Each structure stands twice: as C-alpha cells, then as structure tokens.
Image 1 (cartoon, rainbow, N blue to C red):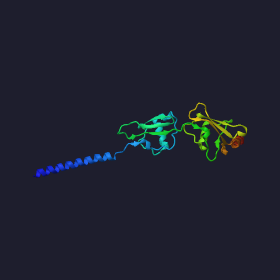
Image 2: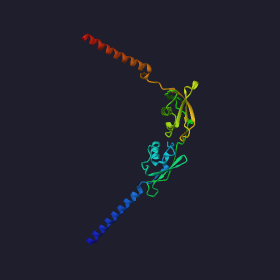
Image 3: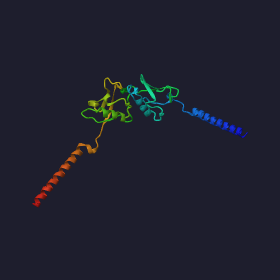
Image 4: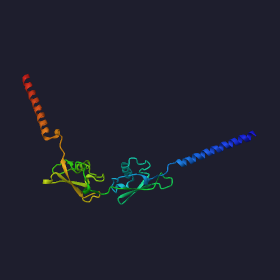
Length: 233
C-alpha cells in the first residue's frame, strides 16, 4: 500500500515537472522576439550617397544610422543586402528563412544630383570667401557654401565644382559651376560674397611694425654690446 502511494507521488511529481517544462517552452516561444520588419524603420531624409556607394551595404547602414540615430541594432552590414534601383536603394535581409531576425524590405531614397541653381543660402545670403589672384580655392569655397546654409550633400566634393570671381561691377560675386562630366552635381549659381577679414595680428602693417621693433631691438643690443666692450678696453 505504501509502495503504491510512493509510486503515485513520484508519477505526480514527474507529471508536474513535464508540465513546467512544457510551459517554459511555450513561454519562450510566445515571448521570443518577432522578426524585425525593415519596412517599419524610419529614414526621413535621403541618404547622402552616390549610386556607387549605395551598392555597399556597410556604407548604406552607416549613412542610415546618421539619418536615424535610433536604428535597430539588428540592422548591420552583415544582416542586410542592398540593391540600387534608379535613385533608390532596396534593403533586404541576407537571411530570408523563417528564423531570420529580419523580414520585409525597405526602399531608401538617395540624394541624387545636386542642382546648383536650386541652392539657397541662410539668413546672411552671402558667402564669406578668401580670394587670391581673383580665384577661390574649391575646397574652401565648398566649405563656405555649407557654412552659409546651402544644402550641398556629402556626395559633392571640391573636385566637382569651380568658383569664378566676377569682374568690374560683379567683383563681389562668385559663380559656382559644376565640372563637366560629373554625375553628382549639375548647373551653376551665382552668389554675392564678403571677403574674409584677416585678424589684426596678421595684417601687413602689424607684421611690419613687429619686424621694425625686432630689428631695432637687435640693433640696439649690438650697439650696447659694442659700446660696453670699448669701455672695458
């Protein structure tokens, strides 16, 4: 009789254990992460990538994170693949199986060609440039454009633009023009500009004054030294 009770108790414990394991398994399945749907992820502004760069998954993910700083960590250069279609890039999971952490697809816009004639500046409406021999360095000019509020995408580099200073009545204007054959930028635009003012300590008169003072000090020192030596003799 005692053995039967012991056996029943043991069977009951085993059943309870199996039930607990089953519930744990079901719980894990229920609360397991659902695949992340790429189509639900945000990217409010176009990616600043050329079509060539957009064919690189790492560059796409990196730029996407710039546009969407809260991009899910599941989206990496290894978890997605990319395909450039016209002026967009399609992002899809590398793993398309049912156990994949990602699903769906996302079409991201690319900035495309920067049309110079559509550029506008900020509140000042003028560029601040350094002009040397009636020329403006393209790298400095591009930097000045962006600092003045012109929305020039990162796809445009100093090698894509020329800056030409006007003559006569237009001497305070500069024409920004796309280099022929470039695919990232087109057209041209003209802006007024202010010349960068040198700090007072870099002006010619100040440097001349410093030079005169230094020369005078050296000459005075030499004269005093020579005079002292003569007295000692």
